[in-house]
Amino acid sequence: MKVRSAEFVISAVHPSQFPSDEGVEIAFSGRSNVGKSSLINTLLSRKGLAKTSSTPGKTRQLNYFRLNEAFYFVDLPGYGYAKAPKRERKNWGRMMEPYMRDREPLLGVVQLIDARHDPTESDLQMVAWFSAYVKPFVIVLTKSDKLSASKLSAQVQKTRRILSEWGDLPVIPFSAKRGVGKEAVWKWIEERLDSH
Ligand SMILES: Nc1nc2c(ncn2[C@@H]2O[C@H](COP(=O)(O)OP(=O)(O)O)[C@@H](O)[C@H]2O)c(=O)[nH]1
Ligand SMILES: [Mg+2]
Image 1 (cartoon, helix red, strand yellow):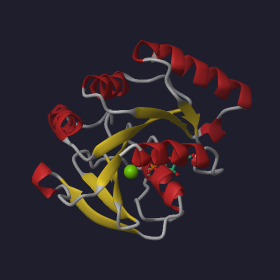
Image 2: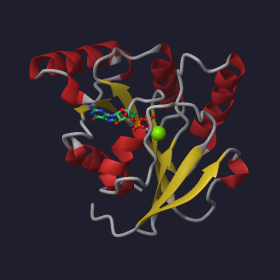
Image 3: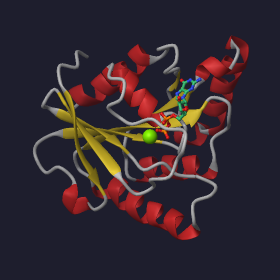
Image 4: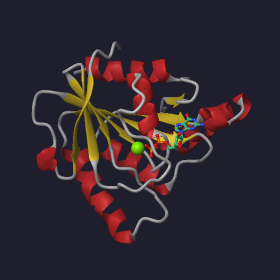
């Protein structure tokens, strides 16, 4: 994919703020700090478009980026931040489930999981929603540069095994630091866009 233009559109906190033009969208989901913003920046070859930080927090916003004046990337609110108040975690579910269920332009979701960890309860909850609401998704294991090649390939197999009740899932190892996996993630996204 040649990214000719990429612009930030809105940090939406309510469905009424979601774009309402013809543009379809691909969403990115994962725990706070899993590497979501870094993945988006790598895909777009833009350093600071999606802000990256090591201090997680903003759990409510859906950040919309418009690409090639044709479709959107949606940076979903991070979850699973241990220090987040209970009320905030509830808000996350209240926001995310209706989004997954009702958002018609949503063509697919890139689900990020840290390559060093097994899927968490919240990751499994997301996958259960993708499945219940028939949204195609792909698993991306982030920060793969932090594992040896053999540990990484073991973790890919383990992740597929843990998620096997949802089918034979694609699992793509990715590193923003090394640029590994970028082509494979783009290929999956392009297939989703082409299916439309
Ligand atoms: N080693 C390594 N660190 C990464 C990678 N991707 C992200 N990080 C770091 O992980 C932290 C969180 O990244 P960020 O993209 O902001 O995560 P987000 O909260 O999911 O958006 C930052 O300190 C990044 O520099 C990666 O592929 N390799
Ligand atoms: Mg982020």
